[in-house]
Length: 287
Image 1 (cartoon, rainbow, N blue to C red):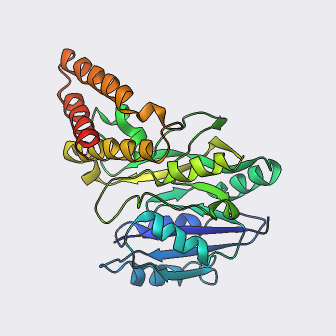
Image 2 (cartoon, rainbow, N blue to C red):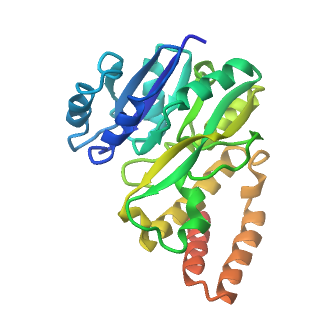
């Protein structure tokens, strides 16, 4: 392993990118690494902001490059970054992820010491701009927050994911993942699925944390409803990719599970839960 290429895919990241870069600038490592910013059709001042920031950050000035990906979609931007990377490990960092100062080192050490693993993920911790609403804890995993299991898993969040670059070769992405203002996702699941198919294991490290900044606009009920709609759409797309692997997303299972959750919310007079499950059902069955 000769180092890490950190890839940040940006779509109009001007208002979010500075603290993300500041935390990367504090990384403590004993190996070389680079930062690749992928401009995925930004229409704001993202590139100018990045250039202004890195000139003031000693670690980033000489190791940062900016590349353009004109095809909209997170997976296309990730592929562009990976094709540009010069190191054999890839770390995907979202534009609102604030990695702890030893994040790169801990993730690097794990893959170096465990060659049978192809991916290692971290543990997202919320950093909300305002006090979160009461429903937030129930649904915060949708924000790539929390640790599913401190051990071997079948999937980790794309945010903070470190993987061997060679494992991205040969993947024909069926999902564009997030595109523009769309919240549809699933690209991280598709990567994990392909890595498992290549015979590697996946690990989540709960003690390797990063903050995920949540602006006030994403703490509104209208936003969580859009997220649940995206969840329903993503589940259907993943099931179509591999019915055997994603059998929990099968039509028969989802109908029983989602209708059950809908009625549970109705019985509890949980109107937010009712709407969330309704939007998930709607997206799954109407797409």
